Image 1 (tube, rainbow, N blue to C red):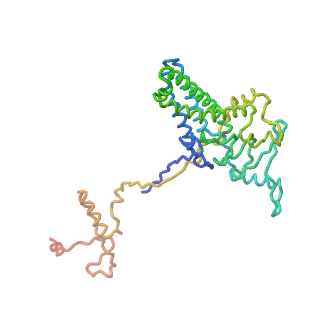
Image 2 (image 1 turned 30 degrees about the vertical axis):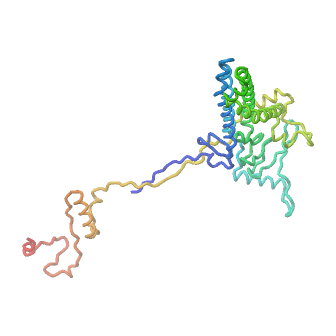
Length: 385
């Protein structure tokens, strides 16, 4: 007997989201697909700090102060926390239009622009939006089928429109946008302080050791000092510190990297930035301390929850089902009796079906009326005995 058993399979929205992002931990972690440089970032930070804690920290804690490794550990943990928060969070991805919404937007555009003659180029799909008494253009995204909000842009690497798009940073393995820019800025700021801190105390360590055993002997005694200093000078002081200064300038103006590269508010346009408050403190408070908007993706929302499968379940047959019917042939009785003998039970006595004959076909002395039972003759009984 087959029984239909319904099984519920939970399919969450992150499994069906378009774009080139990868998700982990059931949609809680969101990153870009190209994560190789992000692993390199982790290796450089962990490797440099491991060399510093292994070789210099113990000597400096004894000779100078035990607060040196403590402060270095605080900076290291803060930099790692902000890095992971930047890399694993939603930067502000804007959902794509549903088919019905995209069709409605197309109808709206056609009604506005009218029919374009064949061979002519259609007009650009742009909407004008006023912000602080200044006109801002909203551009149409042909991939997401939406008019992008102000300051949003489509990332070609992640294939998503990101709100207040700043740039795509391969070092953190994610886009930098409205929802994770403050963590990105705090990451590069803390990383700059950490590397300057380590570089400074590397020089102090080498100077203290050189006074006792000489410079060359110091490098031979602590082989981790020289590589760590080279890594910090090359990868950090020239890049991370400069990047921190550049983003500090952008935060003070309430401007994004994308807007600065395109020259949206400078250069030929000579248009005043409508998002700037004209005050450095107010701009910094808005960018770094303003309310963090929630994610509009709803990655862990349930998309569908249904699936049914069939299972075969054997049910014991009742006594009426075990009794053979008159339609069963001798083969069925033989199989049934053999199965009963295997079980060790006595065979059931069943009546042998007699072919039906009409009274005309039977001999005269053997013809019976309906309702009579045949009585065996004595000769037949003796023969059987």
